[in-house]
Length: 444
Ligand code: NDP
Ligand code: 2IT
Image 1 (tube, protein in one colour):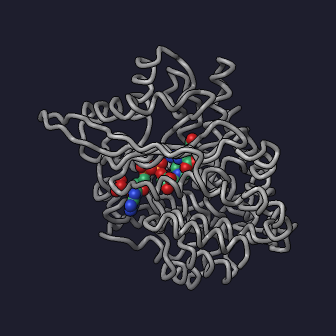
Image 2: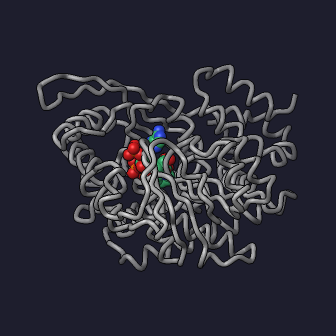
Image 3: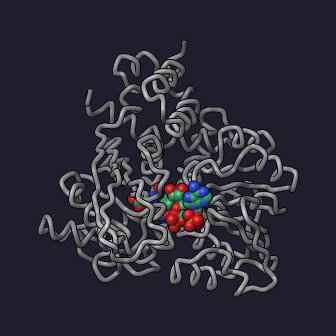
């Protein structure tokens, strides 16, 4: 059996109840075959792949908190410190009832390669909790965040592990987490990113993931002789990534026809109204059913359906495994030309394969959504030098990083004989730097 197959089998056997982690490991290791085959003896001797798929450290802890009625609750907190070969652990905190260890591990594993692709010195980590922020008061959110940080603070630091936002964790949560870290340690340091602008946050971090997604999509199309202006797009999700993806898409002349939340989706033939979406989601924290009040010509549908709309570009920006094989078939049938993942692993393995086989340009999340964590690393730089850069400076750096990632993934794919297979290209390009650092640092 090949080394790659052995490791995939061992990961499944050792972590039987973690399907998302299996999926992420399979996707990456399958892509790495050409590199692993060329170095098999050395990698086996150094147990390189065994070390790559085993987190350096996994923390799991109790998070007790009290609601507004005086009732106590207990959630489970996680932080998986996956790989520190190229820098301190870096990655977001997800707050969603579906969170479990396998989901945090899949996200942490992806983060290793994504962070490497940014070209910045950040290792891979991820954390979160099965806490559901929906419907909670600000005081309840604060109680949860303070309790979560009361355990987490001892494991993180500006040079150790730097968490940030993800699903359910935005500026409000980062603020409460930061306040508690400061209280417990007495240290005012860049231990979290996505901070508010008044206490060390970076301009353009809020926009970075969505904007970065469009910068990469634009470049990928350009490399293939296609102009992004005048195209139509379907976006899923209506959170941080989706909102700023829609905003940048419109600035680039793309008409975005859809967005969604976990209850339903919106079709707006005139193009999504970003100001309305921001008010509904960022200010009111309400549901998408409200969108019709702002745009009477739009349609709201219960359930899923974003991928049934005829568009040129598919931009999944909600969550894992939200673009299925049947959706891929529909996109192809409707003449879609490119899919770029704003979310982490939103496309199933079968759907990805189908899209690629049918000539769709496919940018995997670890490349396409790397603008968020890249800008987090820029926030860390600004904190270290105790300076703040202008929006234009950060945005220009972000654009440069996304264009670089796009060319690096394309070049790596071509070098190994997989031209235009950006999944293979991104995985290999991300892996190369990490593996060099791991080999140089000995067995650790
Ligand atoms: P938000 O919490 O701001 O928004 C998440 C959106 O996805 C909401 O519209 C939410 O709907 C929807 N959603 C979440 N879970 C589900 C689910 N199980 N089924 C259907 N819809 C769901 O998160 P972000 O925008 O920050 O994150 C979106 C994706 O992007 C995630 O995969 C995240 O890991 C990834 N990402 C985020 C980055 C960032 O900087 N924030 C960086 C890189 C990747 P509802 O409100 O109904 O739950
Ligand atoms: O998935 C991701 O890259 C993020 N949620 C952002 C992580 C970060 O550290 O900014």
